[in-house]
Image (cartoon, rainbow, N blue to C red; front, side, top):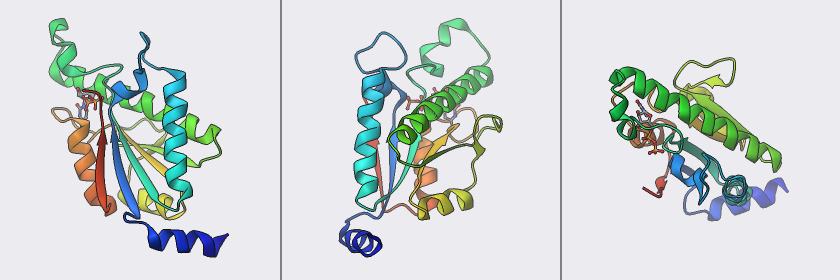
Length: 172
Ligand code: UDP
């Protein structure tokens, strides 16, 4: 099995992939923030790629729950609203981590925003170690700073983990 995997790995066009998933994709056609079927379908697709021997990092958005620009009418301070958006990405990361684990695909959610009771704090070094062990790493909390988006986080993480390609899946 080990030699099969390394054979497969050497045939891959991209060995380490950074996928940006917008929060909106978890919504599917549902009125709720999550569509359970979509969540599992996405997890299955990620598992298929991992089973080929590809290392997968995922930056997750929060748009299905909270986005600064969708809530400007509430007149919350910008930093507060952005923190809420980053927390939304943490919720999505935990849901997706659970979906992957449920399929027997090892996954670790990490957050740039401190939420240590729920998930590990992001560090590039630890993320790379997880990836090298074949675990999917889910990057939550965006960049950890307000006034940014998870697209910026995706570009940053792709560089930090030395991804061969950055892919974006979005409905927006
Ligand atoms: N956000 C932030 N800093 C970041 C990433 C995200 O403040 O580094 C906040 C921002 O308010 C944003 C929300 O989190 O609107 C959700 O992220 P994003 O809009 O990128 O999610 P997506 O549209 O990809 O689901």
